[in-house]
Image (cartoon, rainbow, N blue to C red):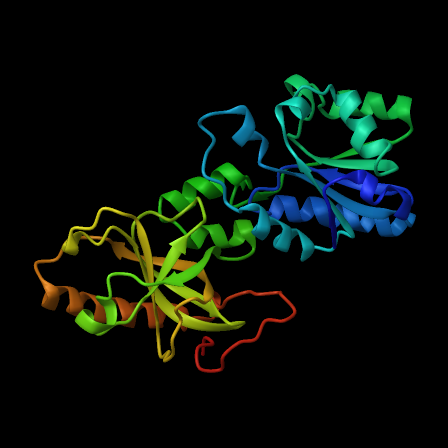
Length: 328
């Protein structure tokens, strides 16, 4: 997938295009269906498949109370690329862009810039000033400008429409297992391993990787069974999210204990996939009680991750699995 920020950078290099446009926060099953349809239509008509999205997310510009987003831009682009579009136009969203009418936006970015002949949008997508560019108005504009518009019906799983809001609510409630069918993957965060309080291995006997937090959305504080990617390999693990009340901390932290792992992780970028919540975070009477509870958490985590349905799903072509931590 080629990523461009200005359609002029690619206008002369592509022919006619089939375009889908959206925020794609989470790149969930609904988004995946939309991108797949766009790519298949483009192949059938010998056109270029293009995904148009925005950075920052428009809500970050238009509202002071924007929610935490499921995927930051880097991860969103990585995920989009896995579903096959040839081009991603990543537009810098500004207040000036927000004031463009649907017709002006389509003309400037999609027709002049991408030679769009077909647009495919989600069932609830709107673009342009005042969200005036809905399916009906865009279809009418297409009849005047020479492009067609199709709209994908909502994608439902377990009786409810798949949406970024639904996924966000589940993650924040700690219900990470039900997120799997909505995303097609476990919810994940990524970060650099940094020095923490040096209590895990030295004091408790369970060394932990402390993440430098860059993501916005985190599961409800507690203990989780996780998969951890390290240097393109995957390992079983258990993570604590919270403020470590036994030690009276104030700042939110994500600490991951990798099962059966030996090595120095400081400075490494790791990816944590949240599989299932084990328990709430709570304050213990002392070190011994905490150590005993951690031993139980580790055993529960191992049992959860050993189930076939808990297997990690990674499609990145350079990814490798460790034989020791695959579910049996």
